[in-house]
Image (tube, rainbow, N blue to C red; front, side):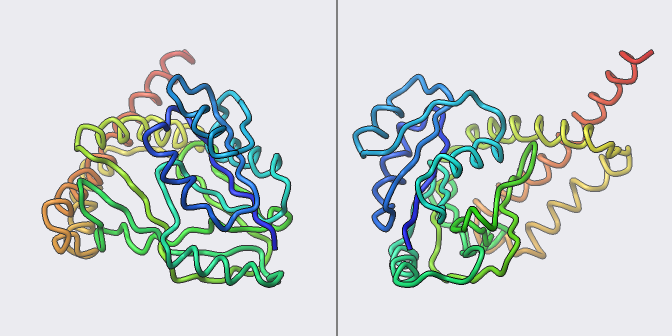
Length: 253
């Protein structure tokens, strides 16, 4: 079982070395870059990756392009701010000893946020399909929260995929602003209405769910911050969707 690792990048010189060092189980690494202005491309070449340039077309589309460009059918897809834990690496090496009769493998993802590993707050175990057979699976999602869909069974692995998220709340806010733009555009494209009551009620419910039901309080101040950011995400997504819909209606008159 030969594996091609795939990563899509844009200005990831800080994270990329850590991700590439963890891919010792892979027979090939494909990096698809969309125009980095830092040392991302040089780092990829230093690690012997197959480096391709492609203008940004969206998360799912970029990742599917990377999978098509790979030499092997089994794809291990990582984001640049992720790495394989030692336990997950050992499991994948064990899997490689045979040709699995499945479409993919799902494993938990553990996030590091504001200097702490998060165990609750709806962020863990956050299981993702990241190792898959491209003949039986592909990425989908036009805007945000892309994911792998398969046409066959999926097996669970236990080792963690490690995700290094935000080092500061200002960094989180910048990410939140970008993703709420995408989420609002997705709502508009699908014709999903952001009613006033949803704008008023959903953010506090999201905070309550994240902090209490999903036990964010057990993650300390990071859990409180995650809960607040989750509520803010919902509010800004709906607010932006309402503004976009109003503008579209005005433009159509």
